[in-house]
Image 1 (tube, rainbow, N blue to C red):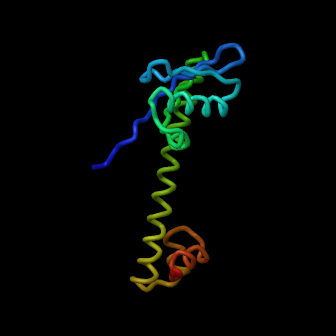
Image 2: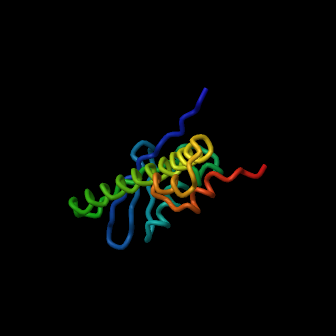
Amino acid sequence: MNHVEPVYRVVVTREDDHWLADVPDLAGAHTFARTLPALDQAVREVVVLAADRPDEDMPTLELAFEYHTGDQVLDAVAAEVRVLREQAEVAKHAAVERTHDAAVQLVNEFGLSVRDAAAILGISPQRVSQLTAPRAS
């Protein structure tokens, strides 16, 4: 049976010169730090404590940060940027996988030249050669 790791929602606000974090789904899971990277670490520590998880889980915790800077328009734009960047990352990985598969098909199965496959895929002939080279065992 697959165990699905929880995603912890973290609400972050700015107060004076500190960032405050609250994990609404975990009672007592609050922390603060001067910088966002430091806050990330502090949140991981508090989640491990509040959720009674082993310290080894800290680096792999799934955290969904929700930032509230005090400017709702800016917060919405920043949230949209994060979503777009996540979507771009997913698309990039899909493109890498599909490019490999297509290059192998075009050259090794369909018999096209590396240059022709490169033109069809919009990548360099060198990259097609890399993708279609036999892998060392």
